[in-house]
Amino acid sequence: MSIEPLSLAAARRIVLAAQGFGAPRPPRIDQGHLRRTLERLSLHQIDSVNVLARAHYLPAFSRLGPYDRALLDRAAWGAKSERRMFEYWAHEASLLPLHLQPLLRWRMARADRGEAGWIGMRAFAGERRPEAEAMLARIRADGPMAASDFEEGKSRSGWWAWGDSKRTLEWLFWAGHIATQTRRGSFERVYDLTERVIPAAILALPTPDAAEAQRQLVERAARALGVATVIDLRDYFRIGPEAARTAVAALVEEGVLLPVAVAGWSQPAFVHRDARRPRRIAGQALLAPFDPLIWERARTERLFGFRYRIEIYTPAEKRVFGYYSLPVLLDDRIVGRVDLKNDRQNRVLRVQSAWREEWAPAGIEQRIVPLLQGARDWQGLDSIEVVDRGNLARDLAGAVALAD
Image (cartoon, rainbow, N blue to C red; front, side):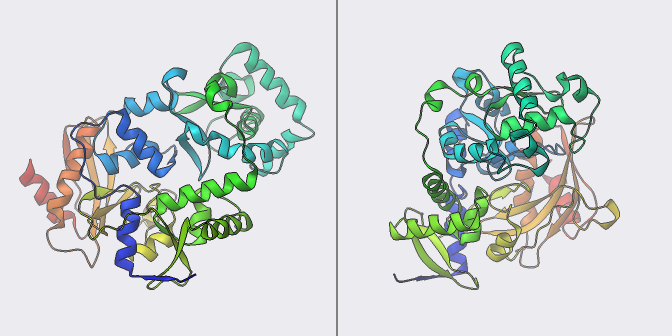
C-alpha cells in the first residue's frame, strides 16, 4: 500500500477539523450541539480542578463558545430518561456517549477478574470480594450512596486519602457493577447499581468481544484525532500496545485507515478515510489542559511546535507560565497561553499571566480579548483583570481596557 506524504501544515488542518475547530459557532447552543461535540470527540475527560471551570465543561466551550452548563449536567447526571452520557475510565475518568458502554465492557470484565484497575483495588476481585458484595447489597437495598455515606468514609478527605469504602466502591465501578448516579457537594461521586443508571436499551445491546471492541475504539480515536500514530491512537482510550497494533493493522487492511508520512514525524501515521482536508482553518479558542487536542504533550509538540506542561503540581516558585495555563489557538497555530482564574468571590476573571510564542503574529491580543470576554460571561463574572506577568500581559491589558 502506498504511503501518502503529508505536510505538517496539512496535518494540523486535518487534526483541527476532526476535533471540531474552524466551523462557525452557533448563535444559540442547544443539547444537540453538545451531543454532536461529544460524539465527535467520543469523551470529555473529568478532572477535579475547578480554578476556572471543571475540565469536562471546557471542550464544548472551546468549540462552541459560552453555553448553559446545565445542559451538560442534565445529559450526564440528570433523570434517566434524559441522560445521554455515562462515566467510566476511558482516557482517564471520562464522560462518554451512552452507546459506547458496550465497547468498554471488556475493560469492566477485566477489572472484575482482577486484571485491570489500580493495584490497591484488585484484592476486591479475589480474597476481599465478600466485602465488595456486601457493599453492593447495601446499595441495592438502600439506594444511591457515596463514599462519605459510609462511617469509615466520613473520616477521610482528599483525592488520595482513600479508605476501604472508597476503594471498594471504585473497584465496583471499574468492574461495571455500579455507575455514577450523580455528583454532589465538592463533586463527589454518588453510585448506584448500573441497571438503575444506564438505560435498559443500552444494557440490552450486544457485547462485542475484546478485539472487536478495541478495533471500534481505535477507529473512533482515528476519527477524533484526524492524523495519528499508533501511540496516539492507543492513548486515546488507553488500549494496550499489542491490541492497538492489531486493531490498526485490521483497519488498514479494511481501508479505514490510510498510511501517511507527516513531514518531520519519525513514526508512521494514519488518517481516517473520511477525514476532512480543509485548505484553511479560521477561528480562535482557549484550550483546556485536558482537551483531547493537546492532552498528549509529545503529540502537541509534534503538531504545533508548542511545548506544554500543566503546572498545577509544580511548586509556585518553580512555575513558569502559571497554575492553570490555557493555550491560545488562533487559526491553525497555538500562539500563546493565558493563566486564568475564576475569582468567584470578587466576580473577576483574573488573567494571572499572559504569554505569546515567538511565531505569534502581531496583534494577537485583539483576538484574545473576545475569548476572555466569552469566558467571563460564561462564568457569570463582571470584569477581567490582567496581571502584569508575561511577555503578552501589557498588550493584553491594554486591549482589555480598550474593549471595556
